[in-house]
Image 1 (cartoon, helix red, strand yellow):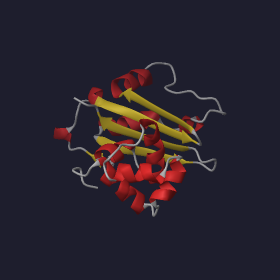
Image 2 (tube, rainbow, N blue to C red; image 1 turned 30 degrees about the vertical axis):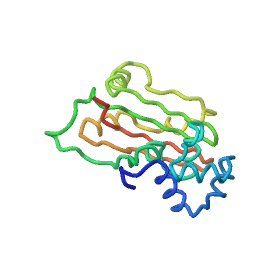
Image 3 (cartoon, rainbow, N blue to C red; image 1 turned 45 degrees about the vertical axis):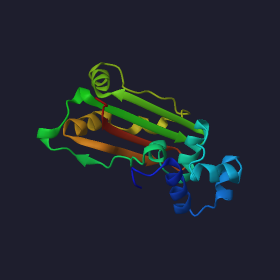
Image 4 (tube, helix red, strand yellow; image 1 turned 90 degrees about the horizontal axis):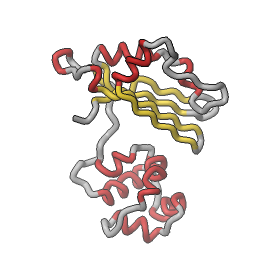
Length: 172
């Protein structure tokens, strides 16, 4: 995807990459094929409430649709180029059927929570976020301290619960 493309051009490209016609995409979203055509020809934009559904259909992020921004790859930042730990954001995304949970924590807060006597996260066994119980957050924080950025964890269980954990630089 090209950053100079319009939103309509990105929607058209993503739709074609998924092998969908305008009519098929329209049916999945509950809109008319004419609406999809207007989006792709930059005559209109999709309703904001449809962006998450579009991203799910295209298996991408809303940012990719709006800005062509690709998800961050996992990288190790050279020591002399690393941001301070307090300038990083710890992101958890959980998708359990129709339930979506996004948690964005400043790394400084996560570090304080880790150093307290309380557990960082506690979840009941019936919680959609039960996958997080087995994650060693101390090790994830240690990875961030060593300059690792991007997706650190991706889990999908047999029930279809999908968990992703990222560490990203905060916006300055």
